[in-house]
Amino acid sequence: MTGRRMSLTEELVARCYRDVADAGPDPDAMHLDDADYEAMINETLGAHPGHGPLWLFAYGSLIWKPEVEHTEEKVALARGWHRSFCVSMNRWRATKEQPGLMMGMDRGGQCKGVALRLMDGDRREQLDKLYRREMTLKPSTYKPRWLNLATDDGPLTALAFVVNRGGRAYAGALGEEDVVERLATTCGHWGSAADYLYNVVKNLEQRAIHDRHLWRLQHLVAERIAARS
Image (cartoon, rainbow, N blue to C red; front, side, top):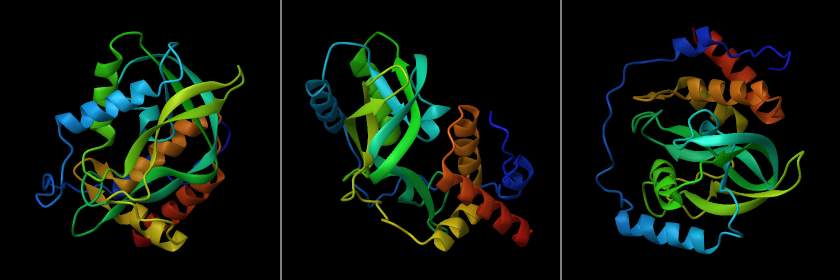
């Protein structure tokens, strides 16, 4: 953990929690089915650049909740992509009445995150778990893509879930004030958006990854929560 002290604290995050019932899947949305997942897995494995270990690039919640087991992690840099709260959501950490935002990796800039080396085993089973976690509706707002990453130990290729700008929930670049307001106020049955932001920044800082944009956001969100309370 770095020596920086976050403005967004567990106490401030706790103020954002509300007991929210899950409204369930959107009945009007088109959901991915087994055939869709199988086709995506086939495409991913067909494009895999080699037969070595399978690496996953985590830049958000996959860092602390990767869904699949891993044996190693490395700090890694993806060039040409950046973190952005560019995905609209009305479930999980938001509601239809109070829509929120989720983070994605959008084009441009660079993104430092964590490369996770997955267990040697059934790759289809591992990918199926990941895909069902990351992608549920179509057209999907996230899409799997092999990225070339830079690490202190040299380059490696990893699977990442980047934003599909043609996806159902892509919101594009939003103003900072709008992003801060949503992160400071929305909550769903999985918890609050502030809790999500807190965990992303905390887990990055624990690995000596300092994202200046997210650091500024957590400070502004903390101010917004404190002012409201």
